[in-house]
Length: 371
Image (cartoon, rainbow, N blue to C red):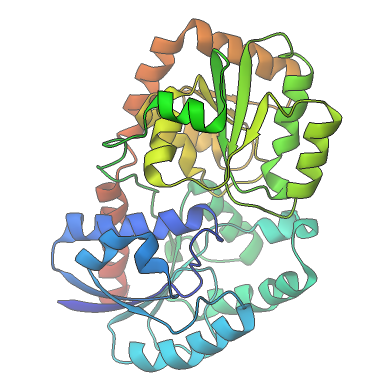
């Protein structure tokens, strides 16, 4: 068995968006795809096992003494605690986009996106300085780089000057258990006070680039007369207060529900009952909720930005951020629901956890061979 040490210390449950599911799912898929070929040891923040209990049934997981909420402490622990324990591993995989100042080799580095280059205004000064200094240096130290989409691969090649043979796309994959035990529609409607005939769902942390306000304007404008409600499901981000003000100013508190971060059962139930997943994000390295929605039968309407058209394919609407165009798309998925559901389910079969694991196994084998 090939020993692989995986740095997940950056993966604070509920705080890092889709990258959390991306790494956990591909590791679970790795076991499906490669059996016992790789002996994975994951090093994680305190609380990750409770958030993802299935990972302990597949791999050895070492939790740190800290929840790693503070970046400086986490970077120090990566360079000391993790580095010492990863010594001697055949492959050292850093999943959070950067390599700490001290790390055993050879390194596989996952880069989720390069959003900080296009939207620096969405980052704190501290994080922007950190990424500006560490990410290019990390790329130089990596033997191989993993990205979630061809869009991110192209941006890495163009913006960081990396040779194409050093970058591989490891697709996002959804687990086979998705949708097996969803919360019932009746329970979710009662709990969240959702009474409308049509439910538009947006599962995303309330960060500025997620563009929640676009959907508020959609409901305040072209869809004002539609019997519909929007459910925002996700953690509290940097744009949360401004979003709340926008909802109140438009007097839409009864039509837009902020329900917070959901567990898997509630997520699956909400997407299963949705008239559509609406995804107006201005920047995504992938966009996992799109595939989750397709697998669960929710038609998809997404922005035509960054990686989203690549993920949507021909199985949903990928549109400019134009209110009238989105209103027309909502009416279309209501009218042609069965057709969009069928297309979405077919599309979702191309993004399974075992496929993600198969992609990752190919990268590990390549690095082990010294390629």
